[in-house]
Image (tube, rainbow, N blue to C red; front, top):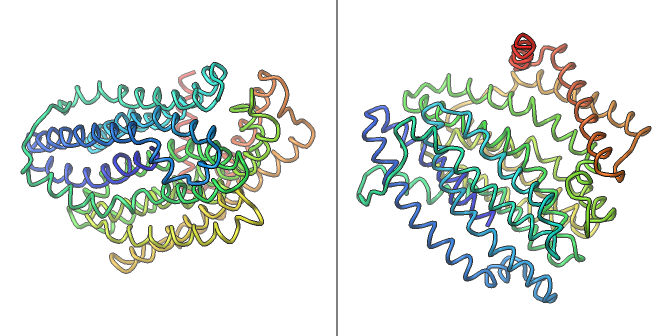
Length: 469
């Protein structure tokens, strides 16, 4: 279901819809509303069929994606149940992604930016409140996924109504903009969902590893998705309308400036996020999941998996930005080529690392594949449009890395004296919050003193908050 979410929602629909919607809105709001209505109608019909097929054919889906599970009937039955519960989420999140594209195109960013976080909140609530009510804790998490999908959709309804763009059914199948979106969507399906395709590939390989390996990858990925949802996906979605405007005007100088600023912003947050997740992996996993059947050994193995996933976080984030530049000029072919390379590298790295590192090696392979994806996109952008000018960011990147290294040193030093990972829930949670506050404070103080690009925005936000108090 997570793969189909990217295929039908956040990835290709948003990337293909926004440039066309922006182009039409420049002509008239009525033309743009027609695009919204007919796209909503087609998407609703398509999603209804996909969701019904997914629920009814869950057993077949699991057999295809996790062949190794068939040897364990209990594991196979549980996976089928989880698939049936979570498949309707595709319907909810895809409509939510359409709403997100509309609102971001109209520069209404607050609710769409917060919406992806609600999925993670729903999952965490499911793990916290519902897991203990089922024999298999994962069932509670699955219901949390559905809750997150409902919240993601509902939170965007009020701003759509205020904009006068709340969709209604329209069966104008021959609308030229819809055909244009369709042509962009088909090649972008693969390119925009490469991260999920890589996860699907390693899940398939992990199904042949000892029991629990797939779960360790899944839990660790849920944590990684949190900074991706908050910063990378949200920022890429916000910057796409701006890039689309520059593309329509053929102002590639300003497009490059916007891309560099977006990359600097996402790295300002996700470089320390990657380091922080690696250093605090065990207490993070313990606070979120250590209960019931999720024991100390599960916590340790999932934390180690998270550490390897964290290596690729800055590159996965950057890929979201760079691929947006191609969709803005309505070129979906080059992201597909980069995705091909990423998948091949991920599979090759997975086979090379699965035996020495097992599921940890598979997580590392995803990061290596993401690096290949990013480098190929940069190469293709240079050939198509010209140099992006990343050398101008090297100074800031080194300063960010220094600040993150300083943060890691402080956290490791403090953690050496006080480790409450497996303490009762309250002190465990307080310990984690204190460590996050200490690490964040150390890093952002460092980048402010070093005058990293973008840090002045952070300082301004802090000053405004202090004035209110």
